Structures are given as C-alpha cells and as structure tokens.
Length: 526
Image 1: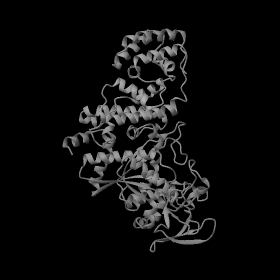
Image 2: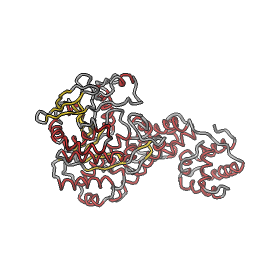
Image 3: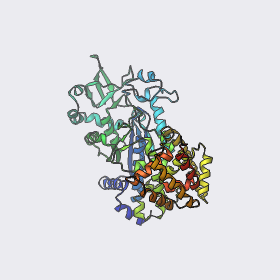
Image 4: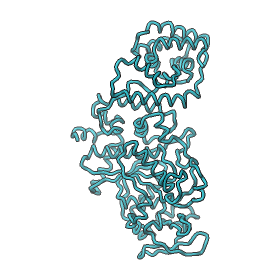
C-alpha cells in the first residue's frame, strides 16, 4: 500500500476511516491476529435495503481498515438469528397459514411457505446471500441454528449460566413487573411442540449445565440442558454471547438499538468479554414516514432498486450521511444515480485527500480505472418523456446523434442506464404526468423561445443553451427564474420538476425541441 496514501488516510475525516481508527485503537488495548466485523440479520422476514446498508457500510469500514493497516487480517461475518422464535407473521409472504400454524417455533424449523427451501429461515437466508453475492461482498455467513446445535456456542453458553445471577441484575431493572416474573436469559425449546418457550426458570444445575423450568400454563417442572441447541438465549443476551463466542471487534447498529447495545455490552462484560466498537446509524423511512420493517415489507426491496438503477447507486446512498435519517422511496433513485456518476467523473482527477472524501473510493475500494457515463439519468428520463419512446433503439438514436464518439467501454453502462430510464419512466413518471396548457402570456414567451432557438440549430454546448433560456426567463413576468423553469417543465414535459434544460435540449435536439414547443402551443401534448 502506498505510504503517502496511508498518511493522508490517517488525517481523513471520512467516516469509514474514523471508524477504522477506532478498531486500530482497540487493537492497541486488545491485541489480536484477526479483526472480526459482524453484521446481524433477523431471518423473520425478507432482507430489505436497510439490511444491505449495514453490510455495505461495514464493508466500507473494513476496506478503510485495510488501507490504514494492510497487514492486519480481517473477516466480515453475516450472522443470521434464524433460531429465534417466530412471533408474528410477516405481511408480505404467501401461504400465511403455514406460518400461523408454526408461530413461536424457531425460524429454521418452520416450513418454507414458498416451498423452495428446507425452512422459512433457509429461504430468507438464501435471499440474503443471493443479494450479498450480487454486490460482490466478501463475507462469511453464519447460521445461529448451526452454531447452537453443533455446540459451537456451548463454551460461551456455560459462561452465561455461570453468571446467570449477574445477568438478571443487569436485565431485570430494564423490564416491566409482569415480565420480571418469568424472565430468564435462557429460552428452552419445548421437546413436544418445538416452540421457543418464554418459561420461568426455577432452578439451575451449573455443574451439569442444565436448567429446570416451569412448563407454561402448567405446574410441571422440566429439566433441560442449555447445550447443543436445547435452549437459545433472549436476544440481548444472545447478542452479548456471540460477541464473546465469535470474538467480535466491530458491529454497527441502528439508532433505535442504542439502549440494547449498551445492555448487551454490560452482559458481554459480565461473561468475561469486551463489547465491540460500534457505530449507530440513523434509520430509513418509507413514503409515510414509517420505519422500514421486515414484517411489514414496506420500503424498497433490493430487486426493486436494481430494476431502476445500478448496484453502485445503491452503495452510494448507503455511504452518504449514515447518521441522518433518510427516505427510502423510489423518488430518491434518479438523484442517487446521477450523484454516483458525478462522483465517478470527478474521481480520477482529484487529489488524494479529495479522493478519500469521494464515495467512489469506498464503493470501488480504491480502483481508479473506472469510466463514467457521459449522459445523466435525469436527462434520459426526460428524453424518454419528450420523445415518448418505448424502446432502447430510439433513445440510442438521440445519444449517437449528440455524442460523436462513445468509447467502447462506456457502451454497456450507457445501455444499462437507458434500460433503467425506460423502466423508471413507465412505472413512475408516465402514470403521473399531466401536461398543462400554456396561458396567453406563456404562449408569448414560448414563441420567443422557439423563434430564438432557430439560431442554435447546430449548437452542442449545453451551457450556451442554458444561458439563452435563462436570459429569456429574466424577461418574463415570473417572480423568479425557478417559476419560469417550472412553467416550462409543466407545459413541455408534464411534470413540475425537470432537468437542466440546456443539457436536455442539446441531447434531445434543438429542432425537436422547437417542434415540442409548437405542439405545446397548439395543445397537442397529452
């Protein structure tokens, strides 16, 4: 690794480097031959973009760590809590009766409602692994069920049993009076029903590693081993246990889990471990302002985003402002696509310190041999809108007419962007667009614009066109230029927002824009 890059990275304020430096400081206190970074996933529903965000961000921290300390080995663990009991049926699954009939059973013991995999958890886990692989993440998947049943957690579970009373002292003050009556960090798996029981533990046998619990709704006392998958832990105790068992050095969590992180950290210390370094990110919200949830199935899925945009644009959205709450709705996609391409365009010519503040550095792990796309997504969307094209060939015709020489390596990226724009336009713009008929005063301005555009038929510099449209706007009755441009968008494109008109007109073609204005004046746009 370039030494000057390391020196610059040490001074960088970019959040992945700030997080990586926390890990390096941890290693000074607790030396280790390998850094373990973990992400957690609850397999009670389909993985959503928020799940992806945690993996993507943690991967960026891991990359920053490799830049700062190239000789330190690190691993990213993706842990699925698939032995958890199903508490409620998610809204976005078929064959709901299959899930309803298996409530409270471990997710890995419930049949797959799709009938494709060995269990409900296996289906969700495979969805998770499929999209992580699609993004090229380097990770190691861990199933909670596998680790419990194989005995890989047994050593640490014994520590939990040995410190049972200390854990109660930590947890009981944080829960309600009714829950206190039956709370235990251990949840036995009922040998008869297969359910994960929230049962009262009446005695401990620390020597033989077992507990005696009261079977719910009965007076029957049952003894069971805590080892080999006969019990699982309540999730906060479980979180602490796996930090110790897996020797986790770093794990992110949503802002809503700050109290849980602190509680699990105390349990971790009680069983002889050291809580990992962490980072609390803000949450994603849907169009109603509600938190994205696996059980509700609200927000955007990975496949939905990738229908309209590239993997890199989604990674960019995850990189930006992780401590700020953000909408996760379809209308953020066009901006994310264009911002990614803008960052990509700037990257090769930037100084090192600026590259380290460019999201592209983390998305592509320092690769500087990248080609930008010379056309914006917003312009393509409006090109599709104005031309009412329904095929890539039509859009490519405009592109080739404007760009004299398109590098071969950019062809596929442009083609993908064209496909995305056609799909996005069809699903989100076409159903809502509504052309506004121009008022008499607006017809006068449009006529002026049209007549003067004839002097720019061969102009391919978007800034010249932009300045010209801007100048006409200054001579209108509109209170602001923003209102002038909004008027053009509503009349010519059937929407209240639009592209930088200089870029759009040069790409669409000056002569075609003149014809578009004529149609608007005549009321022919529908």
